[in-house]
Image (cartoon, rainbow, N blue to C red; front, side, top):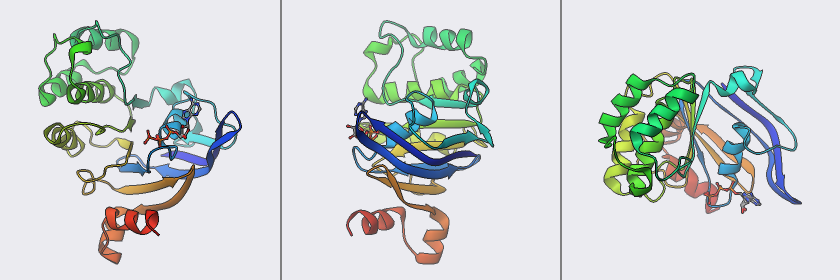
Length: 229
Ligand SMILES: Nc1ncnc2c1ncn2[C@@H]1O[C@H](COP(=O)(O)OP(=O)(O)OP(=O)(O)O)[C@@H](O)[C@H]1O
């Protein structure tokens, strides 16, 4: 389990995360939902140790996050982090050289699943292809958890559907997935848990199935209640 407890973060004097607490379980898909500027990316960056926090604790399976912990979490950012002149197959070889948990066989399965062309240059990829490529780099690592920042942002319907498909495939089975979004349409039926964040605070966290059956509400219904009240 990834456990975030009372996390505070500020940029300069501006408070961005104000005592955030929630958990993301292994074998479940947890969605961190919030409008622009709510603090979703900052929270993922804080979990990955990419930005310092100013209070609170983050642990993975009971251990504070350190080098060993980071080998168990993959991060899929919302932008390309490899040089634009590199080709997909070169990026895969780079991952093999630098990431202990890189699984070339699974990465090749993902390449086929997404219909990626291994010789394509990263700088020439469309937004949708870049999103699939980033997901391939993340899921190509043998990690227990995977964090994704806005995997659907600005992507056409068919690419979104293909990306959604991976969430219900064996390529992701058994892992803990935590992703951020402000568009939940396609993912609504696949999510196990929704965590709503607003102004750096968690305002609601719930089991999607339970809310659906006990209250007859969709995640979107709960979002409308919370954000439009
Ligand atoms: N490096 C930074 N320096 C100063 N302020 C920042 C920095 N990064 C983010 N912020 C501010 O922190 C707040 C939260 O940003 P963050 O990117 O975490 O939100 P978000 O929920 O991911 O938004 P979006 O959906 O638009 O990506 C915003 O007001 C943003 O302007």
